[in-house]
Length: 249
Image 1 (cartoon, rainbow, N blue to C red):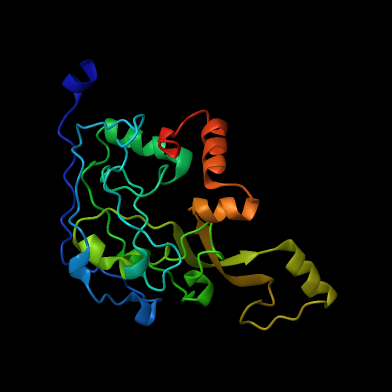
Image 2 (image 1 turned 135 degrees about the vertical axis):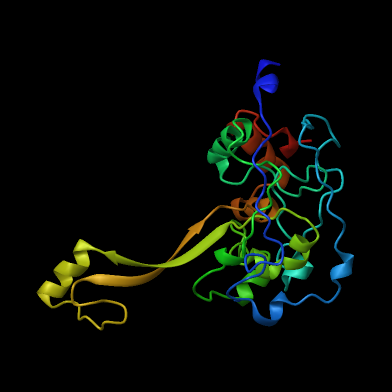
């Protein structure tokens, strides 16, 4: 009660409609990004900020989850990974973006340093290098621990974003210059030769790097470990100190 009475109106969200931040700056998916029937995307159901749904009862979690067809050929056919708290009735994933670091978002929101209603713009987060699409993205048995479209949210799921869905990237790709002592030693000894394209004579390497947030497809994980999905869910539930009851309910 004291906290509520002390709270002030949160800062307003920047108005960036129709700005360059709305759409992808770089494109990596090519023909796979096209949508045939965008009208089939369901309306986004937003959870009231004052509402705190519980997930401890069967049927109380995500009663109308957005359908996902893991391993489908296109983002339209696959559907997005919806893990934010903004669409509690439509979530199709368990857990929180950024894992344990999600508590810092909670601190920012409760201290009024972050507008909880703010919708981020991902146009400028598109990868600086084209990676994919590959045939393995469309095989549900080949990739089961990351979202292969996680670096191209604004391109692959633009129609969903336009309808008000809060879909977050799970992969960030950028370029960097790094200096490895081993490379410098190899240059000095003559084991490596500088080509000035990947490795400079000073020992700098030009690299493309990625930060990846795990996205587990539980049926695929269970198959790889030779257990049933129920057994896997029970084990994860137990070893995370019963943190996510929706694993079982």
